[in-house]
Length: 270
Image (cartoon, rainbow, N blue to C red; front, side, top):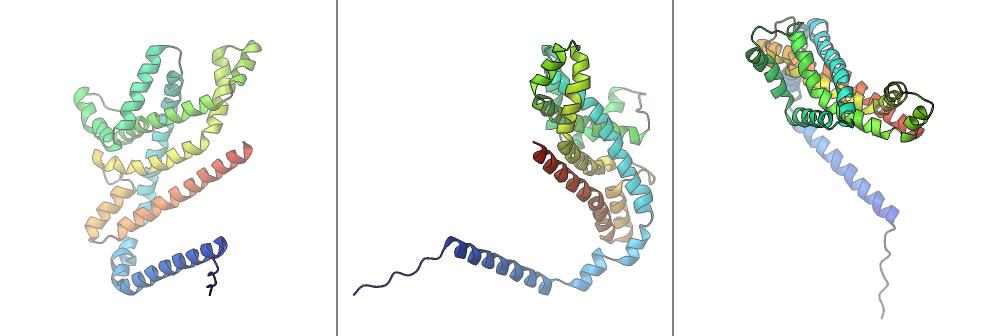
């Protein structure tokens, strides 16, 4: 007597069952969290409207404004330094390549916190009497620029190498000098190629600006993280930290979305 073989599930059926199990597991975890959490205590500690009111409007008029200033100035200086470093990495002069590579390796390998401490405490010791223009604002801009320039240099180098060599050859065949061809033809194309990763670098720099607290700032120079931490200490409530984090997200999420859109647009163009 022969036994009938059990029918095998189709791949689509197995995939449907697997997806159903995953959804059920997710719902079970959410239900457990909702039932076990102490929601009144969470609201009182992390979303206290009275404490949140104490941080307004300074959260936007002082902390966010300073964070944007630190980020934009550091990004601009990093951009201005990163592009020459990328050109030095591709130079036919060996010392230029060595110097650029040493810089990139050092400042990509060091934590951003160490760079801030070097600018804040090491620079005055190494050069007595010397002060960066702008005070804390200048120090933060230089520290962020040193960090971002190392990453931007590698990004620019990849963009320059992605430009077809025929572009330079065509320009030189028309009698255009090498330097003018780079400035007029190659560099603009390279910058257009690397716009998405440069946008991601802006997001990272926006978050790194929180390290300004290690330079010792006044109440009018605080950025988001320092502002939230100080207010949380004063009010003995973590609500200001949540406020500062939410404000970071108001900037970083749109920038991240913009970077993804730019990447998708470039992918379609290619």
